[in-house]
Image (cartoon, rainbow, N blue to C red; front, top):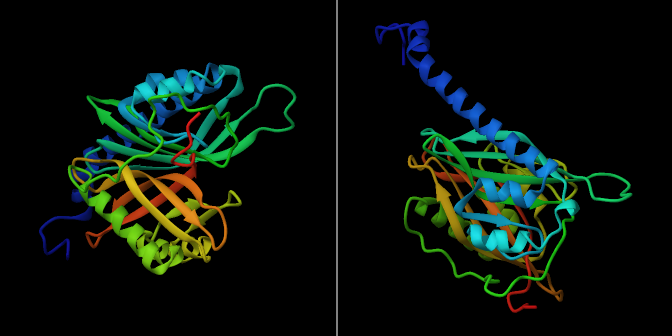
Length: 294
């Protein structure tokens, strides 16, 4: 569009958009400040206390080796078994994304855990967090921790080890359907084809070596192989404007002649300029076999 023909100037548009841009920056700053508070509390006190104070009532935590922990009750029951001094976990964002209505925010980056005792070095991993904003306050709606060894405890009775697939309904329906279509393509054509097709142009993930992998082709190459991938979403969230969302689910990866690997994941979805939905980042960790029970 010719701005002069439209009867305005670029400077005039800048002035009109200025308050909106400033507000978005303020909201982003508030999200990063909220995350910093939670991270510092985890480092200085305990991860369990930090999550207890920041997790949405229906929030999801993907703790390495545990099943999908859904809701404050199950998250608290599991984390209370882990000694506070065994996890001095802090995290720092490398990326942040806001929905256009600022009701949902995504942060992702690195985690650092300093084990107790005479451990030789801090453990470095990664995380993805989905934050919901309600009445100006931020709460963690979903979080996955990857790439670092954290204490693992038997799963208390009453906590589900296995969930049914989530139906494609509600505010997050577009992202649930996208996740299911993503999984179907992986089952039909292989993980490499599916990840390359469903990655957004700016998608970025942490590779197996801990290095960042960016772009559809590179991400596809990173999961190439003969393994059969199966997964489905069990939890989801989205902004009211439906331009940003997340799904969490259970996955199984089976190689020829090998025991299946059971995992879980959190995928962040964005709506790209052509209106379609693609993932912007993805991460996961191990879960127990569905039949395992202490």
